Each structure stands twice: as C-alpha cells, then as structure tokens.
Image 1 (cartoon, rainbow, N blue to C red):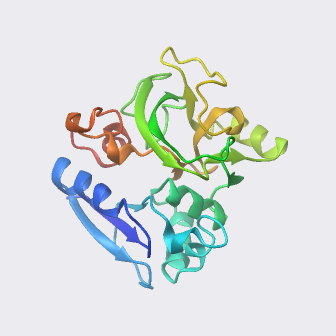
Image 2 (cartoon, helix red, strand yellow):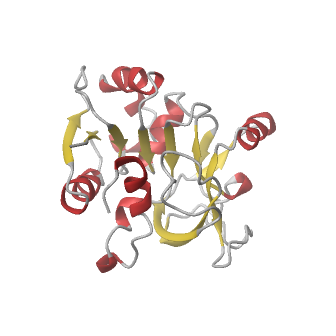
Image 3 (cartoon, helix red, strand yellow):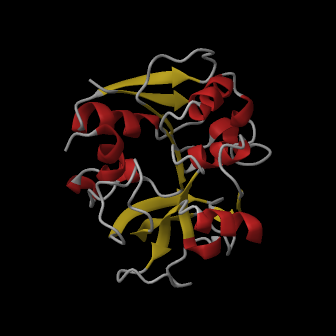
Length: 229
C-alpha cells in the first residue's frame, strides 16, 4: 500500500486536510513528518501543505526553507521522487530553490479566498494524468502571496519544457485577466521542475476532494500519483 508523508511546520494548517484525503478518501497510508525530522522513511510521495509556516515572517516560506527536514526534502526531490507543495508549500519549494521564480504579494494587496477555475495546461505528468488535456477544473485558493513572478528567460524555459501545469482561467477555459485572482504572469497557478517530479501549486486540491466541499476536481492530483478512486 502506498504511503504519503505530510510535512508539518509550525504554522501549517492544511496538514490534516491532506492527511484526510490520503487516509480517509483514498484509503492509503499517511504519516506526518515533523519539521525537525532529519531522516525520511520510504515514502511514495511527500506533500508540503498550506498554512503560514513560521507566521510568514520575513516572507512566506523563507524560514521554513531552513527547517532541518528540508535538507532531506531536497535530497528526496533530487532523487526523482514525487513532491507536492500546496500554497505555502509552493512558497517553500520556491524559497528552497526546488522550483524557479518567486511568489509575491497579490495585485490589489488583498488576501484572496474563493473558488477559481483552472485549466490543465499539461496533462502528461505524474500529477495530472487523471485529467484530460485542457480540462477546466474548479478548486479554492486562500492566499495573500500567490502572485507568480519570474524573468522572461525563466518563463520561456517553463513554456519550452511544458512545466506550466495549471493556469487560472474562466469557466470556458480562456486565460483572461479577469480570471487571474492574483496577477500571476501567464496566469500561472502551478508549475513543475524540469525533471517533472516536483509540483508547486497555489490552489488547494485537498479542499476539493469531496462533494460536501462543493467539488471533487482536486482529487485528480492525488489519484494521478497515488492511484485509488
């Protein structure tokens, strides 16, 4: 049975949500990984969940990047194993240099907490294979620092390598300014590394895995890599 590690930093608040999806919905093994752990077990995937690690002091994800566990997380990622960073987890991955670019304050300088539409820009990955190419899905966001920024060279590399995985769109799949909740360049909502084993995304798939929450569109992220429903 597959096993998922869920990293817990001081200030994480979506760790149990991810644990619930893996354990209760997919009926797989899930374990918490404390931020001070300096060794990792044999996990099939690891998730850095959302929240406000270390209170977002300095900037979101900046201190969590230096937690003892991150040395092992970097080794895990460089070994080609599946790693997902959601919201604050995405910010940590960027701060740790596992994903390119930066996440800066939303345009409008407002915390955005709402459902958004996403276009599956690349379905041919280990995290999106249970979706269809170009599929429009809906899941929630909850962030103040989710505006993806990168230099033109980095953006071109992301495009050339098909590393842009999710993009903010309208209900028809159009990439419009109005559908972009935070000002991210190219409407980017999620990217992967060149090796395609590290995914960072601002929307919360773990909050869209049961109809009682209004959507099951996020479940595909977890079933793509772990199997199950």
